[in-house]
Length: 355
Image 1 (cartoon, rainbow, N blue to C red):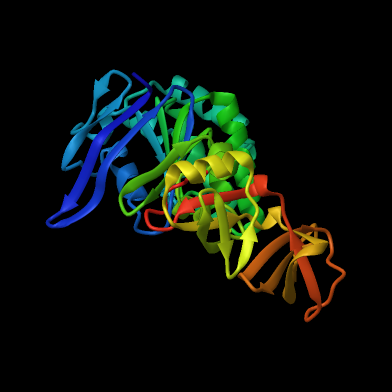
Image 2 (cartoon, one colour):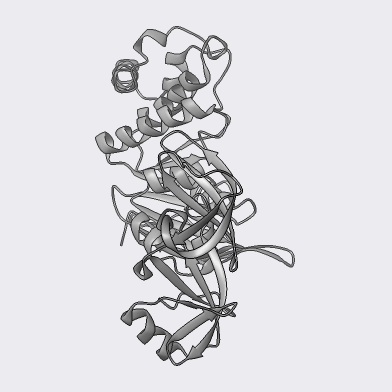
């Protein structure tokens, strides 16, 4: 049994089913990301792990203990909230040590725990301040310190960086990753931000409409998305799609143009048998070339190290993610090329991956 086991967890409010049979196994020391759009059920699932809500059916185990209906205080967890949830009338030191004080931990032991986490998070100079005198990043460190002081079996994060500005989000993301590398505490982290998901997680559960669409390592989810939803949700800019049809046992075309496939993709297509196929290409797979798919450059979005180029082609509008600067001008004729190894095939009806 893993550090956290979620088995066929369902949650319904009257006739509205929020979670539809969630199964997840999290190993000790693992960093699990729950990611998905708003309303997918990820925060509801985290609340059930925390004991703030209970499933309609199914079970939740932390280690060997069935905690499905246990109170939060009996789960040996610590939670970091989006809003920090610090006590405004207490100093940083008192905020960090509050949970230990409630557990009747001796004063000397509390002081040692406060000193340990303050050093780990580099907030020793803030211990006598109150939350109003702290920046957003400092408040987030204090919230993490309060959770760390308890040395819990399970760390829960509920979109902890969403209130921070872009620069601070990057810095805190790195701090959370370093913190996990030092402590190796089993962690469940909820976010709607795919960059956080890809950079922080050992494994990711991509959720939609109360179901896990794919559960795996970040590279597997990015390189081999299980369905079209995952392919579009993970990756920025989003994957380009062309709706294609079969012209033979293992050939595809769209708008009269043939689409290149590898031998392995041809075999998968032949075995699949469906007639409607979604042909996907990530923006970074596309490059400007002397020949290839013709189009007109519609817009350029330079970001510094790379440029997003929107190209109108006979197959529709494509977004290319090109390193460095693009020297062509908007309105110019260009050609897009790609390697067949970089394409993804999905069933046009079921949206499930073919190859």
